[in-house]
Structures are given as structure tokens and as C-alpha cells.
Image (cartoon, rainbow, N blue to C red; front, side, top):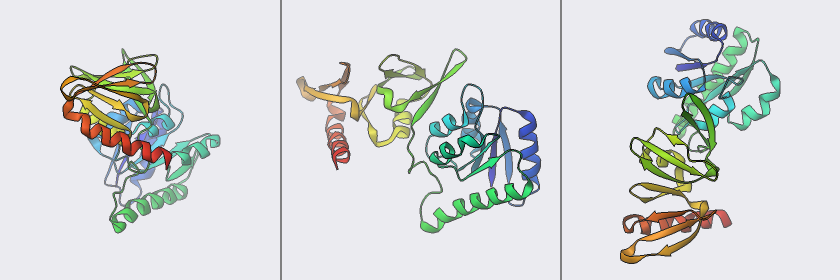
Length: 248
């Protein structure tokens, strides 16, 4: 098992590392000092499981959990505060370690992780919670500040060189990501509508036909987004399926 420890306090990371090193079946251990660092380490280290502190500066553990693109590794939350337990399990936590914990309690958490990682393989399903719990928010870093952008607030997305612009109701933050990669992470609620744009289906209020098979999407709030002939048919199918899911 490959484990990533995410905690802003070095002594807490050191203690958990020492305890994990006493257990069998731990192939590798890596560390991240905050939520932003964790996203980079997850992409590079590819952990099987996260031990994630809840209270961290800028981005909390709960915010990080909601921002993990699928397939997301299972999570054990680690915290000194028991009032976050319900929120942690709402975020699909495998376990909740309350500091200070001992070796026996850690062993129980590891056993639950092993059961989670084994069970999906036996069922022929991926060992990830990402498909069950879609991405709910994004972590966007600009000028040294990291903020949370909720997916439901994004009306449409367009490319800008090596970035994408997230068009929200009141702001348009930049995110270093490809349009295709981000749309893939956001799932069925979003659709490509142009080589340079994607849209959230729930935001579409009208589809206005234009010449040569192109059209224009009128969104909630009045924004107008181009939809090229290349993507129109697929978008209309996705829009119909989305409407059916909402009313079924």
C-alpha cells in the first residue's frame, strides 16, 4: 500500500510516518504539508490511500477531499477535533482517527483501508470512490493565494493558452489545466460545445440556431457561449439525457 500523509504540522507527520513504518504491507510513504502540495504529490506519487488532517491553513482537509479528481484514493481523516466526524463520513472517509491515537487504533484504520482496496477488485469494480462521488469543487491558485471554486458555480469554461478560464457568476479565475482534461474530471454535468469552450448543462436556458449548423447557448444570467456544428449533436443528446435525469 502506498500512503500519502497530509498534515501542516511536521511533528504530526513524523509521528504518523513512524507508526506506519511499524506496519506490514506499507510499500511507500510520502508527505504533503498542505492541500495544494497534496494535489501535486497525489499526481506524482499516486498513493493508494490518504491520511488527511482536517484543519489546515488555506485549504482544509474536507475541501481537499471534495476537490480530488477521480479516481480518488480512499481517505482516513486525522484530526484533534471530533466535531468534524459527520462531515468526514459525508466525504466518504474510510475512517476517522482522533488525535492522540495509538498503534492499535491505527491498525484498525489500516485494516479498513485494506478491505476497501480489496473488495472492489473482487467485484470487478475500480478501487476508487471517484465515480461514486463526483468532483464538487476545484482548488484554484492565483498569485500565491489558493481558493475554492464550487463546481455548481461554473457556468462555462474556455481555453486561454495553457490555462482555462472558469466563468462563474461573479468572477473568472484562471486554472492551469487543459479543457479536455478538466471536462473529463467534471463528468456528465458538463459538455464540450466548441474547440475552445465547454459548458455546464444545468446552466443552459436556450439554444439559438445560427447559420451553417452552429448555435449559441444562452446561459442563466445572460452569458452567450458558442456551440460549433462539430459538437452540437452530441451536446443536444447530453442535454436531453441531463434533463431526463433531473426529472426522473
